[in-house]
Image 1 (tube, one colour):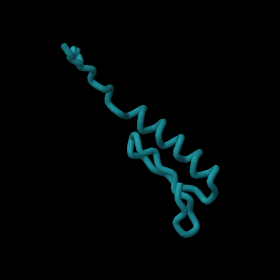
Image 2 (cartoon, helix red, strand yellow):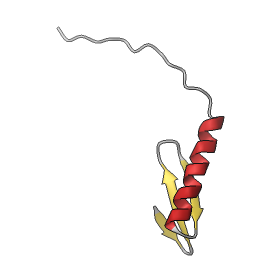
Image 3 (cartoon, one colour):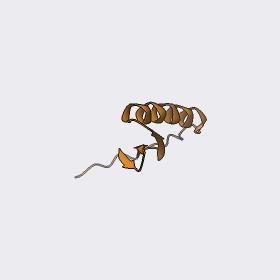
Length: 56
């Protein structure tokens, strides 16, 4: 969370989404909504088999 002039800016680094608000609570609430919208629109991740590596 950082403050830029009259706004608080909240950022979710894991999915690169940010939002702002005039209070910390508003910025966090807006960020929750922005992340939820992002995840609702994001494509499903493609799962791939990870090879098992054994040390001998």
